[in-house]
Amino acid sequence: MIAIMSLALNWLLEGMAGQEWRFLAGQTVFHLGNPVRHVHFVRHGIIHLLRYQSDGTALVLQRAAQGAMLAEASLYSDVYHCDACAQEAAVTFAVERDELRNRLDSSPQAAQALMQHFAQGLQRARLQAEILSLKTVKARLNAWLVWNGQLPPKGQWRRIASEIGVSPEALYREIAERG
Image (tube, rainbow, N blue to C red):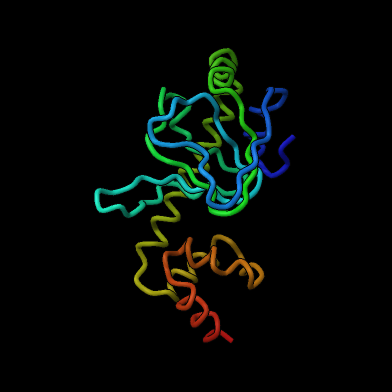
């Protein structure tokens, strides 16, 4: 069904009715306060969950990329507690929230699959926090490489810079120093 999803999410969504939603870069997926009617699973692209601060700056709460469940907490909320905006062209698989909740309520295996997905997300979030706690670009890149293997092609380095919380230029310098 959704080959890029984790096995747990593939199992959870197996046979569920849903629809593909497409978003252009900069397009809003939902706004703070909108009623939650659908749960989105990212097939392609990147979508940020954003909460705007009193000074107008945006705080990124989630960087949902391929395979992620967008705004997981919305599954048990009546309204969204943040905004979601496509950072690049993106495609989601949207299922009705109530249908997904009914499936979880009626199937311990489906609930287990979702819990497995949440546990994997928590592990990734903890790794991200660990990387961001490191002081130098070198240390952050080393930690990222331990968990992810080799660097992706050069065209994706900006994404890595964002993930490890450094400027693209600082990352490029570090990579250049490594030869």
